Length: 177
Image (cartoon, rainbow, N blue to C red; front, side, top):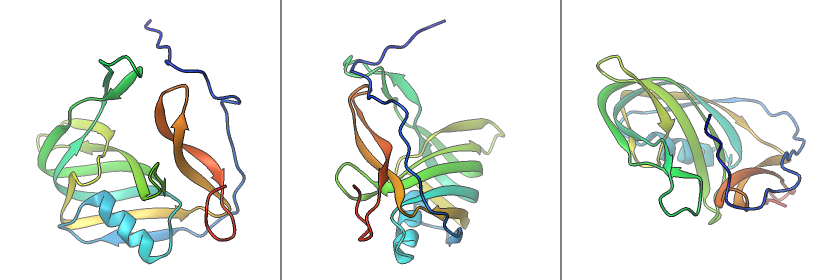
């Protein structure tokens, strides 16, 4: 068995949590011809949602890329993203889950992983990069759970040497604490 050791000091406590009030789910329908992740972020902004859990339940994809992990040749991290794997459509989404929150630069970020089937019936899965998942004519449908009072925000993680989504409090004005 291979043991991976992260390069930095572990965050203490490692297990973080924040309590949040329940929120009502939204059903979001995206038209074809747009990028899945950017389309979802834009649709959620139209509902004033900047913190959410997202489940994409159906999508027809015309062309896409996904990323999987690879050893980091620099040694600064245990792993990084490998080169993109490109799939030409039709690609059928089996399921995708993501988190919407502020990225390290403060812009709204959707971090999403998906499982898909390519046109030859092969199964694929990994991280979806923004701008690289073009929806086909049928578009996509997602169920979104807006997060209230607590959410996730990308912040530097000393153990992994990456910005990772971490739970955070949300003030009444909507900013992270």
